[in-house]
Length: 486
Picture 1: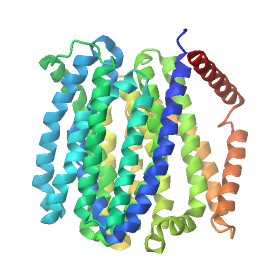
Picture 2: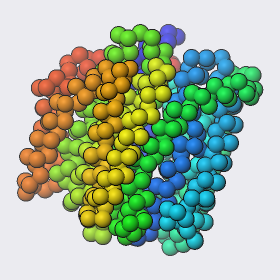
Picture 3: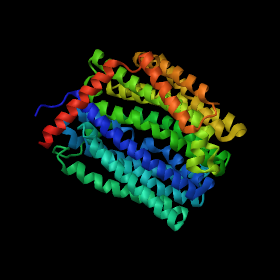
């Protein structure tokens, strides 16, 4: 049977990922709603504060090796077994160091006493298991993402069941942390045998000091930028925990959990496309084509979310979480717009790593993190959680200015910003137009969706050739599926 084209394979894997991620979003939303109603504002804030603090150390847990392993294994497929074994053992050393560092510094961030014990329990799942599970990247390399999708859904289902049991039994808060760690352990125990025994990792499986040094050298710029990324994405919650308390942090955690669900789209597309970008890195025209398609799709999606979510947040939050978390609505209205630069950043990061230019990743997150910390210090004392939300949105600007200044990243960055301009203007206009309409929120949502779809077609964001190509790929995928069945 003939091998499908690159476009078809990327489409198949992206659809598998999107389907799984959409199911995961539903499961995650159900879990977050149940967890928020079960824990209440203050305990929800404490829960978010613990995992936000540990997120500051995820850079050392895997030392930025995820994309490096994917790139190296894609380019040297016959050596993938040894590459992943070496990378996993190297990451384990770093993850243990990260756990020790997190425990040592915990009191300085306001996580002393019983909270320190909870940090230790949560660190097993947040910092140790990711290093052990690095081998799962082979599904991305081999473009068989449906394995990863299935395992991710298994984890979500187990976590939802665990939260249901905890809420039904009114279990102590400690059991929430322990249950999440146990779910992660079970999923990892299922993942490892699949990776090592399905023929995805060719022998020999050997550890190489030379390979380890090379991986560490390649991973260092990503790990170093990961420090800034962790600060940028989670320091707001840590600072809210310390400066305003967990009662103020609770609604902010809910807002972050909801808006971060939209990250399924760039992750699904770029994890499917990254092996292709790595192989096309030396062909400028093909590389720019793949980037252009990625930018157009992701910018259309993220600004669609901004256009349809912003007018309906108040009734939506009240319906799902209750009046206790109603203040989350204003936070969502700010944080949802911060997803747009995040989508751009995902494409930029993958593009630079594919071209072995990861050394340029450092300046952007560092400048963004510094801006975020300064803005949080200025805005949280006066506006609390809303100030933290605005600090997150504003602090993306310095990062993109850095990418524009850097010559190797300038063309890639400018390509994304140019494509994003039209959907940004369209979403902003729709949000302002519908914000004060006295319509039922379901009607508002539908009107916003129709207005955005019409604007996307008229502006050329969505083209006739895109729809035609989509139909061809779908027909090819269905045809191939029928051949395999018959």
